[in-house]
Amino acid sequence: MSGKLKGKVAVVTGGSSGIGLSIAKRFAEEGARVAITGRNQATIDKAIKEIGPNGLGIQGDVSRLDDLVGVYKIVGEELGKVDALIVNAGVYILGPLAEFTEEQFDKVSDINFKGAFFSVQKALPVLKDGASVVLLSSTANGKGFPNHAAYSATKAAIRSLARSFSVELLDRKIRVNTLSPGPVDTPVFSTLTNNEGEAKAMMEAMGNFTPLKRVASSEEIAAAALYLVSEETAFMLGAELLLDGGLREL
Amino acid sequence: MAKLKNKVAVVTGGSSGIGLATAKKFVEEGAYVFITGRRQSELDKAVKEIGRNVTAIQGDISRLEDLDRLYTIIKAQKGSLDIIVASAGFVEIMYTPQVSSDHFDKTFDVNARGTFFTVQKALPLLNDKASIVLVGSCVYLKGFPQYVTYGATKAAIRYFTKAWAAELKDRGIRVNTLSPGAVDTPIVDGQFKTAEEAAAAKAMFAQFTPLGRIGKPEELAAAALFLASEDSSYITGVDLVADGGMTQL
Image 1 (cartoon, rainbow over the protein chains, first blue to last red):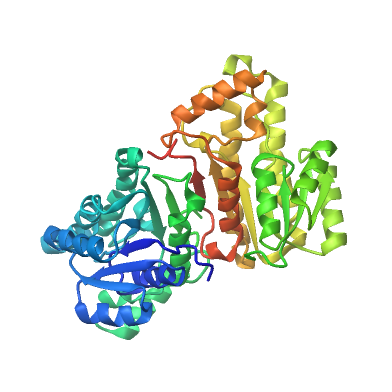
Image 2 (image 1 turned 135 degrees about the vertical axis):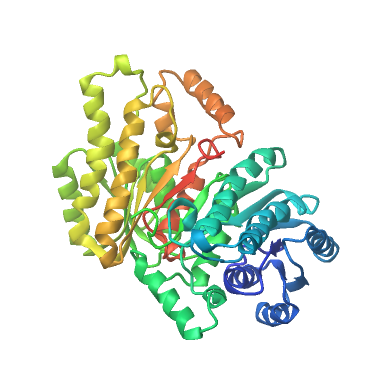
């Protein structure tokens, strides 16, 4: 690896599995010190083993503001000011409109939308001027899919936050961009069903639905996240990088 | 760094601006690059600047025979092609009442028709898994006075991207648009009669850009590299907008 993030400090929310973990690993390989957050301490511990000595695990739930304050306090004390913030923590809760419950709605909204908003707000005191913030959205923010109404709406909200945050943070030269994946090879499909075979079948069906006929690897998403936090994208802000195998546009 | 090791690329409009910066970057990353441009003197300067692993072929993308000659030479020298960056473009700003049929034809001939045939005629040479980057403009995303014909050609390019991504996906060929905002290149200078006017316009563009400055050609070259390389292996049919926030905020 080329040490593109040598001496940098990064925070990846939801960094203990899936896309978040791949991003954290890649950033650590590139020389950054990386704090990850997650709800489950055992999963965090496992992730830190994979990330290695550049990783710092902090248990916390992004939908709880107290947790976020605590997370950034530790980040500030242990790692100092933050160069790259990856707002990645999210849940994938699907269901038909007619049957979607208030409880499901609140959960997907609290973690994906409210969580993203306050993950940035509470980070402001530890963010370095000139920092790069990447908000993980989804290709679903721009296309209709059955059972995705609430989930996609939270991701559309995130797309919008990148524009608004970028405007407000201009004077601090903090750039905020959206990274919107399509289906990715991560454990997220296991959260939709208790049956592992079914989860795998769902993932494969999603892959076949994309023009490239496959799901993305989480490493492909990590490469894009690295690109967005590097100086190479200094002229990009409020933008969306779509990484979906052609799902939305073709 | 060698993200494009052993790759063969063609960069149209490669003698100046974003095209030149992209050609330089690609050579640094290990590629062999063919650049095209209309003026031999500019091409000669560009070749000197790039230094190695580059061939310049004079030609106008709006002339199909020039494109045929370009690809005949590439085929003879390298056999096949991995990357196309279609960055040749023409801009002449004017309000709608002033648009003549000549201006209209020239703008569409270079930007839309020229880009179309740049890719069509390259297809027999393209390797599977090739990457095509069409340089658009953020102008098409928003209404701007005087950019009526230019913006429309860039919207056409945006659609070419989607249709070709769909047509070429089975060969693993990815096609994406790169849409810059205002960038410090000769195409901006060319829109104005004097250097003072151009400098004033650049200052105005910078004011309109949320970041408070115009882009550098190297920043767009980095974006072209990202889209041309394996780093974007799951990205196809998209528009990467690097415009300092001009159309995004």
